[in-house]
Length: 184
Image 1: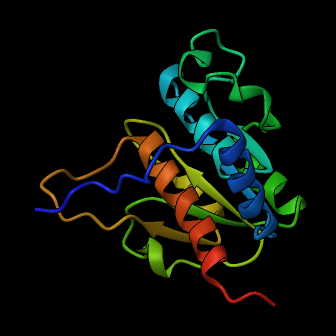
Image 2: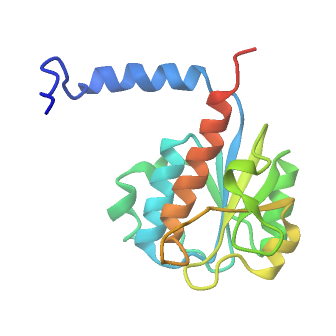
């Protein structure tokens, strides 16, 4: 049985800021997030917090998505809702057009017949990920507007993930892929 490393300690806030600054220097790609019809404020707050953590440049809301200004969003966003620029872009087609107007490719995260595993998805360059509502996922209109569709491989006995968890996994994979590329 091994003993814990006596030199291991949690990072202090200044150490965390330094660590995060180093990762920001390695990050060049623009990353967006489109959220369609996520209605639960706690899910929206978690999504926004993950968006802030992974440096999402812009958050587009579509359908009846709960806005970051909803009073219960802040309970899980913990103040990060002020760090991610956002707007309600209307319908899924209008939101997709807004994403493209910013020069981003749109990749929906959904289980479809033509979806590729997330680790094989086209996440290079400037990309916007899209997630759909808690009960029905991405709408047919959003899927039709997407440039590609990816799914998160799962091996357990549950058929899907919570939308906030799925968004966090997809955002982390997009950044991980960028960070794994050799420096120019």
